[in-house]
Amino acid sequence: MSSQNPGPSGPSIEQLKKMGPPYPPSGASLGGIPTNSVDTPISSVIIALFILSAALNMTIFQRNRRANHKFILSALLFGFSMARISANVMRIVWANYPHDAQIAIAANILTNAGVLLLFIVNLILAQRILRAHQPRLGWTKAVSLTFKALYVVVVALLVMVIISTVYSFYTLDMHVRSELRDIQLFAVTFLAVLAFLPIPIIVTTLLLPRAHPVEEFGKKGSMRTKLVLVLFTSTLLAFGAGFRAGVAYVQRPASNPAWFHHKAAYYCVNYLIELIVVFTYALSRFDLRFHVPNGSSKPGHYSNGVDGEVKDVVVTDEERPRTGAEEREKERQWEADARNELNRQAVV
Image (tube, rainbow, N blue to C red; front, top):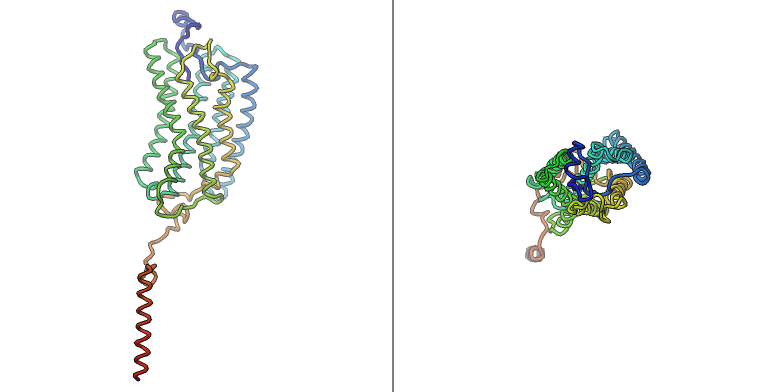
């Protein structure tokens, strides 16, 4: 998110008032204003890659659906890929109409909105790992409600970002712009924390003592591979979100951008990272690795299925494991019984 305040080298307030709203952005932003010579070919390649990603994820989702293998996250990655195609199409349009503020608004909104789907996917995967390792904690109502609240917060932040971004193009009131900037900074900071959140969740999950063995889930792959996948993708997404948050805190005029506003930084921290994440999940078949039975709601459902819950087993005294002292006492009792039987037979 960029500052929309008029810079010292940009148009004056009086000139902007004569132009009328929506007012063009005057602050430096990540990636800057796109140009045909640079952004159009790069965005075209990115569009082609995301078309491939969309086709791959939809194919996986449809094949799984026909096999009665429900995995909605593949559909989410398809939706994310389609959103990224739209964002890059709008960037090409913006490159052809660089002075059209309405196109700039649409391009900015699409760029900032899409990545939220990846944050949600990683939170869902982290929750499944937590429930597999710490079922007593992961399946509690408080933890489940916390994750649901995070999903609601993501939607609320998206609405905040859209409204504040659009409104900033339609006002020159410096006080209002300052408040809108505060909203944008809060949103981008919270999203950076959200992108990082799966990492401490998994680390805490592994450090907590376990009362039961890890509950395996998925149709292929070890738990170690699942952990590596989520930690790897979360690290990339957290870096990208943190970079964008850091850039948002720095106000520079459009005529004097910093090195971190460069187009290379824009494409790397946004689309390159996202492409790596999307193809890593699709090609590693995370739809098989992270699948859990539909309707899972308590410990045991991941590994035994919803219809195959583990029933309480009554252990008799003979089946109960004995301590060493109990075993020695039982041996002495056997020996005493044997001696008594021999003495009885000798008397007879």
